[in-house]
Image 1 (tube, rainbow, N blue to C red):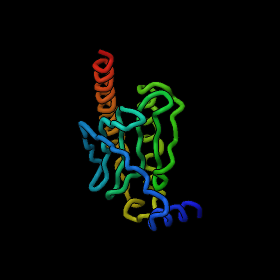
Image 2 (cartoon, one colour):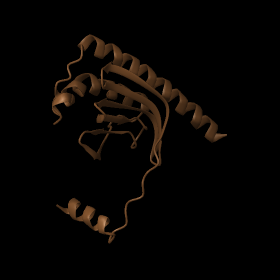
Image 3 (tube, helix red, strand yellow):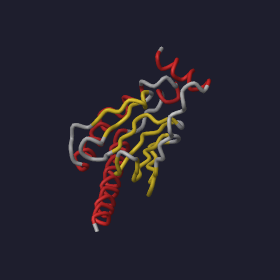
Length: 157
């Protein structure tokens, strides 16, 4: 209820709109699972951190989103609660990537099944194909992590 009141007050103009965060997606790679279902892997830059990221998307909707930013910054989101961040207990980006792949392997398909949209609920990819694609996702996330290491070295100079 409180959230609705705040939104209404913002709409009327009594409370200022929150500042939009500029999100940078670089080196994006799409891994198609089946028609209208894919992983979007990219290097992400936010005010709170930089690093590899992946989104599981179905029919234009984000289902799971992972931001591997390292200690105290890395987190993920589960649809439809994108305003809520779940922080990784894993501290390094490499560990967060491993956790991301594990979450996607164990829960990725389950989260598709619990969405409200019947088209998303009906998604049933081949499990072997899904796991093969996850290996590609992991490899790409690690490549993007290497990019972060290069950026950090350049910032130090």
